[in-house]
Length: 370
Ligand SMILES: Nc1ncnc2c1ncn2[C@@H]1O[C@H](COP(=O)(O)OP(=O)(O)O)[C@@H](O)[C@H]1O
Ligand SMILES: [Mg+2]
Image 1 (cartoon, protein in one colour):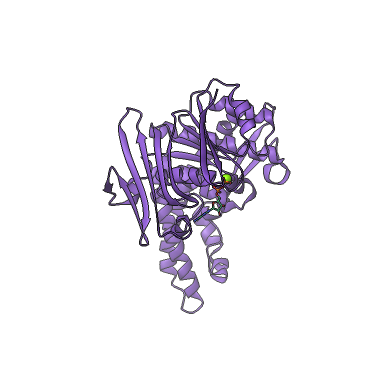
Image 2 (cartoon, rainbow, N blue to C red):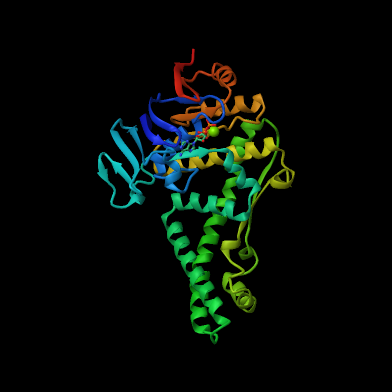
């Protein structure tokens, strides 16, 4: 799938921008703050019908204006054109596919898939367990609808159980209802656990494949799934902790507390990994995710790379470009502050590349790689 054209009206710093893309690599270049990431985010918006960076729609409207609109022209792998329009006007968000409003926004998701890699992904390594769980949950929800259904039900029952635990202090113990919740929670939680375990078992190998190419070092990746369910059945955990949960007034055990430990040569990536190792790991993880998404959706997702070459040595940057050149990816969008570096590297590989040069006033030059 290819994004042929995009137009932005009042989206963040872009008042009126129209851009034609090429099928291969599109680079947004310029100094900090000129709107490269904002343009990338507009592409992400067309894909997910929301911004990657701002959850508040008003923040996406250009200062001083009262609406924004993003329009994209996509071409599917069998060359059918379709138009997606996302707009925010009068506090209302609208997403249109070929000029028709969606009944449910969720129907749009997955139609024009994309994978984004951004500096914010460092949270996957440096952040808390919830960041890693969210990534795994998002990945599994995309490839397995049963997982998503189980996860939604699990979270709902977990909330109900916690509400009940809060009431215990005031009311008499309603242990029948608690037992019903526990039974349901353990059933759903165990399914979630097994699916996560299955995914984690293959993840290290998938990451390793890309990590090896980028780092060119002999370093061993490990991904360990950390869950209390490794040791005890969920129902036993809930029973063991029932008194404690009543005092705490929340559910202290279960798959909502799981973590995933990333290591290189048995050393924690978070505690001991260099910045380069951490960054390489995240890029390899995202490439592995791209492969997974591609294999289940049969559509080549767009690849959005926001400043990923920053703080990587030239050897690693070159290896990443070689991976991108390997034909397994489709259309690629790259932001970078350093035109010379990008041009030097791009000229080493046989890949079509179009440069979009931005300054404070906006897009001022377009040119193809020589
Ligand atoms: N709603 C908005 N209205 C106007 N300008 C905005 C809005 N949101 C962000 N910006 C501006 O966009 C610029 C950042 O753009 P960004 O795409 O992150 O830059 P970069 O080129 O460094 O990736 C900042 O100068 C910021 O003030
Ligand atoms: Mg940026």
